Length: 406
Ligand code: ASP
Image (tube, rainbow, N blue to C red; front, side, top):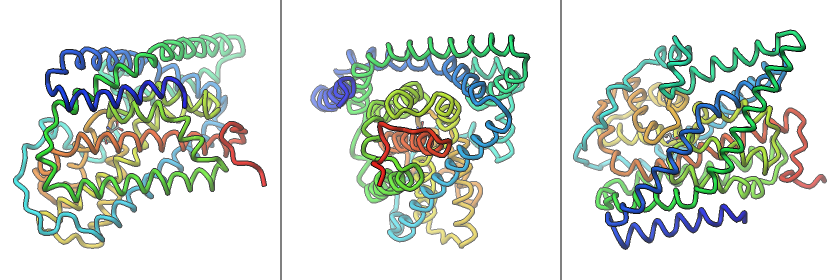
């Protein structure tokens, strides 16, 4: 195992034990460590996304290449998300975790009102009225949209100016990666701080009535992680899943503790390019988009959660309504930002689509933070598998992780 990964594991374990033993007293140490690490990562996100997307698109070079890569990348994102949703749908319909459960409604999350948006709102959100304002507010999709255009038109400039601008963006991207290398070494302390904080602050009583639902989401996520994604890797990329997963441990542990695909993005790019040997062209383009658009774990969880809520309310969903859940779970996972609890808030889109009361979200709040850890790791893993598969489709060798030739 990589030395840094080992240290992150140690940080996680110490955080767990420390949080259990010392309770809230550990916050004196845990809070500053967690905050420093999270701020460092957040500091890197926007400049990384900008330089990464522009340099990726410039590297792809022309409209045909960009079109092909987009279709392949989005093709993978949609297929893997739908497979995840169907896994969730089958499980929740077979085991019916909500049937006969009676739950006091908890408090609905405060951000819920902000999230009551239609599908059209989600689409409009992609086009920035002002790309700089979007960047300042940390809105990722509009920034990506603008950077794709900007990068694309760099490739249309005359030779001299194209060379000049592309070496400028490539150099800026390299600088960002160097900063990220540095930040990575603070990850063990950061992960310690975050884990200790969660353990110290989470009460476990709330888990009991939701136990079956909680376990079912985990079963679905593990099925996706250990069966579906490895199969996709072997079939479509001829890659050894164990080797690739091993390369991904640092971002996976970071995703697990931070609950944010976006915050983990710098480490995901690092691992996918430097360890699983995907080219920067593919990773720089696909991973920032994947971190906000491709959320298999979130999609699976949302499907189970929405149908669970229907079961608790005693609603029998018709076939059409079930299909509606699948479709809106896909859209909601695409629309969810890669930040903590985004998936929970987006369930309101599904509940609205099938006519269920929004307060239902209050019921599942208690176990959301822990589920978020698992679904965020699933999201990040799926992004990385997408990069590997698309790289294989684009003819890249992927020597460190490929299966031996027959
Ligand atoms: N926290 C998740 C992520 O960043 C999104 C979610 O809440 O499901 O990928």
